[in-house]
Length: 315
Image (cartoon, one colour):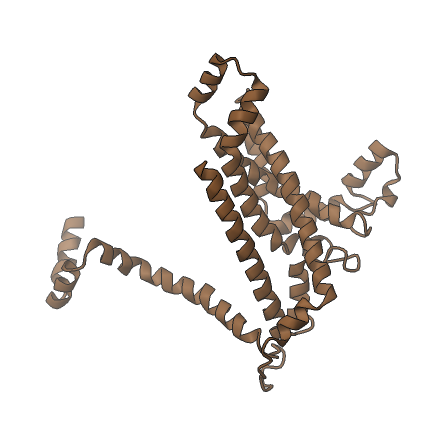
């Protein structure tokens, strides 16, 4: 059936076109198939980037599309770099990135190391641990917002049971000191399984004969961990840090769902500031310049980090 279909298609193909197709190499044929996808990606990713770069040098406002667009040069960039609120938002973002990465890496690697022991029921517990990562951020945000409620939330009652503090005094989302940590806890709960998976892949890639040789040399378990496990899993740990660092630098949905940047501007990360400038103040050119600065910062730091990662992998 397939042969008859192929023969009918071949007979229906015009001879000039058939000769051209037969003359295409395998590489050319591959490019012929993937070129539509590449063009689509260029249209979706590259064009908006260049459009944002253009807008960053103008006074364009999306809510006033008919106004004359003026070229401001580097004025938007100078205003951003001299804006104290922007630097406070960047400090808040750095605070979130640092603590979420630290906690997710420590807990994720510990869980991966325990699961790698292959105890009884380890497959079941691995599946249970992965559940938070499978949920939508909207579901996770609303779920934890309910848990953080001081009147009916289980989180407040659990803390009250341990510390003796009345549940009504535990205002996780409205307290200036606790609000940042409430977001860090949720992000750590949701994305630690992701780090665990990458670390587990690194631990499973270590050949068993290395541990066998270490046991012959009478190396202790602690010595094997520091001399074999940690160094050989380090590239995977660094890769997990890279992925989570990039994602947490762009953190928006969880902050927006839990606190909206409040109380005040305590949890106003860079993405929240960008959203407010773009869609509340309608300073499209200004927000485009801020977006370009964030892009350059993430790209530059990631590039430096990848070079360090390559050096670790080559050791």
